[in-house]
Length: 389
Ligand SMILES: NC(=O)c1ccc[n+]([C@@H]2O[C@H](COP(=O)([O-])OP(=O)(O)OC[C@H]3O[C@@H](n4cnc5c(N)ncnc54)[C@H](O)[C@@H]3O)[C@@H](O)[C@H]2O)c1
Image (cartoon, rainbow, N blue to C red; front, side, top):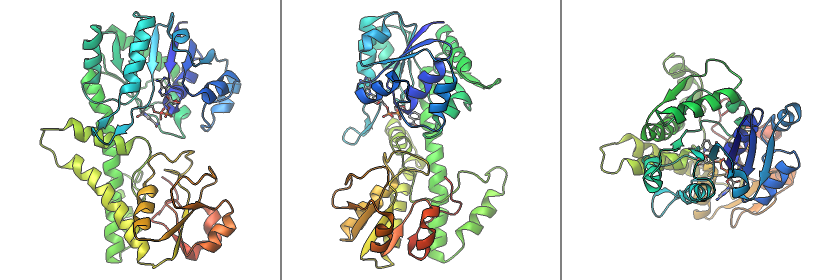
């Protein structure tokens, strides 16, 4: 058993801390006192499916604190899962929370091995290794999905570690031990390859979403059945009948920012696809807004702001771009979102009562269909074919 510090109690940090704490002493650190307090009281930092039950049914050696030194002192590993938001001015990830964490951890315990799980630009790990003249900083990309974070930590698709040496092997073993499956594929690469793997994997997912959305745009404008076209295309085993459900655009915390970061890493390198993926998503959002406007609504009701079915947050949902285009066209937009009563979009009222929301909307815009809209079917506008993500 060893001591492990996990910095950042979000989707990535919390799920990893929980699964690691079955075998090791884990101390989770966050600046968000509410998340820390929840963990201190034996509750999940976030309401991820299955998490509360998993915590109740397993013996966990898990503590939480706001004080980084307490966690990092004596820790063999410090795992970093703080945010790397996209900075729209520099057009790069803002890596300051990761850099500050590395600096603080090394001040307390220069011997701790640092594993970065936050998604970072290509070249970041080498920059940090150079800054501190050490090789005990590595990057291990995280592939978990929000709302499936526990499941994905227990049953990972693969373990990629951006360090070819002994430390990389030890970190891969730590991740393997936390997983419940045998035979999880492990890939050890150089730091920059691992950073690239994460950005290329997410950009492929974004490209796939954009591709099926463009099929849908074509079908909608040509009066064709998108369902028939997508079904026939997806029957090819090389393409597959999954991750092919049209939406208003890809959204969420990762795909929009990771595609843009990859584009930044392509500076000076010939490419067309990555910029096309980013542009295609914007074109899709504009198409959805103009398609809604062809129905000449006076009041548009937006049903849910969440970025995908089953999600508990709205980070970078494509619906925000659609709302903003509708507002530019001077359309009144009202919102139904049970996850919040706050008026989180300026100029758009949140209507907490579903029946009133339905009554007041001329058209109900839903990125994903829901049984609760069944009685207002004639008002619903959606491009969802399969009622799944
Ligand atoms: N959400 C995902 O599905 C997912 C998947 C793979 C990779 N990632 C990457 O992992 C990273 C974290 O994502 P997330 O979704 O878990 O983020 P999150 O916003 O859910 O959680 C991040 C946490 O870090 C805390 N934090 C911020 N600065 C801190 C600091 N200086 N010290 C301590 N805590 C601090 C925040 O309060 C927050 O609780 C990002 O780089 C993201 O791109 C996310």
